[in-house]
Each structure stands twice: as structure tokens, then as C-alpha cells.
Length: 163
Image (tube, rainbow, N blue to C red; front, side, top):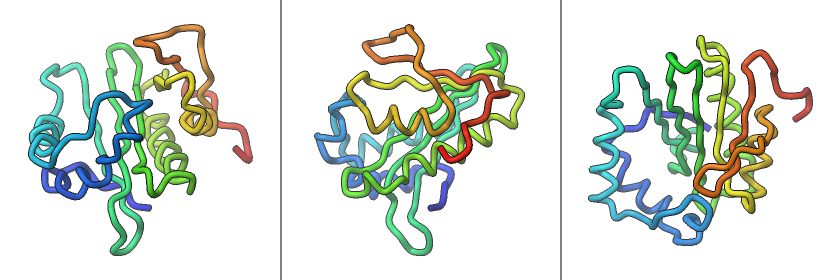
């Protein structure tokens, strides 16, 4: 799989990837039409309006001429020594390890930055995303935000071998 920096031009194909309402059961919201997604991607590509926050967004493409299959993102806040990450894989491509592959790549990259804490927020019933977070060395905490469990990892603690 390839991680490509998100561009506005990805919106049309990504509207189809993210268009299954079932996908939004855990991530919230509803599928966006291509035009609305194009506007969202334009805002994301412009970067955070807060100069203390860096938005990193990628689309995921199967190698070669493969289709786009999802997204992975990180919100880096160096002043708080924190990076929050999230991933979404389109319904037809779930269960193939693609979210784990993408999340591992991004969390490894984030661990190389001067960021001490990696964070993900996961719905308590989303077992697949919990498995991805665990594979990345994150562990659930007692903290809840908007009904989701906060998972954390200090960057000095790598995922266990064989995860």
C-alpha cells in the first residue's frame, strides 16, 4: 500500500470509498458527496488555522494502479508533546490488514518526531480499530471523550514483537 499526501483531487474517488453508511456507525457522521468532500479536503490541505498544530493527512492506495482504499491522519501538537492519529478503511477492503499497515507506518513516523505521546480515540465496540491500536503499541486508558476510549502510547515504548 502507498500513503499519498491528501489532495483535493482525491475527493471524487474517496467519496465512493467512504460512501457506505455502515462505515460511519463507529466513526460518526454520514457519507459526504464528492463536492462536500472536496471542500473538506481543501480545508485539510490548507493546514490547521492554529500555527501550533500540524495536520498530516494521507489517502491509502493499493500499490501500482490500485484504487484508493482509505485514509490515515495525524494531528501533531508539538507544544503539548502529543500526536493524535486515526484511520479509516473503506468497507470492501476491511479485514485485510490495511488499517494496521497504514497505522503502523504513521505511528513509526510520529515516533521519530519530537512527540512523546501518541493518542487514538476508538469507539468501545469497534474491535477492529482496537486491534489496530494495540498492534501499534497503544493501550486503552480509563479516559473517555465523546463516548470513545482514549488509547495512548509513549513514543519510547514500541509495539511488541510479532504484533
